Length: 141
Image (tube, rainbow, N blue to C red):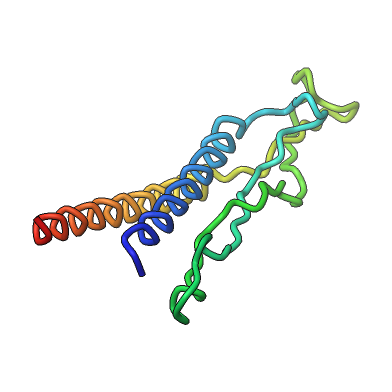
């Protein structure tokens, strides 16, 4: 595995975790949104990752097996909305029921912390690859 391939994998991981943090932040920000442009309450979202072959790899077996991560899509949560009896709410139905998103703040904070730690791990890998590159440059000069 080359230093460039290590960097490519780490950068793809950082991009994926950044997307995860963005979607999680959107979920937290819209935890109490009862009306959206699409109609109805906000639907919680999750990024869906997929593995992808590392581009421009050829040669030995290891290079052919190297994989990276991509955000395939952002999926909406199919669970039912949380309902609360709030007759005075502007979005209440004829029975006084208001539908809220199925967003659990504790779960979202856990997702945010996990994404943050994964992002940090990829930053560490980038820094180590840079240090290795500098060491190789010093040896060669």
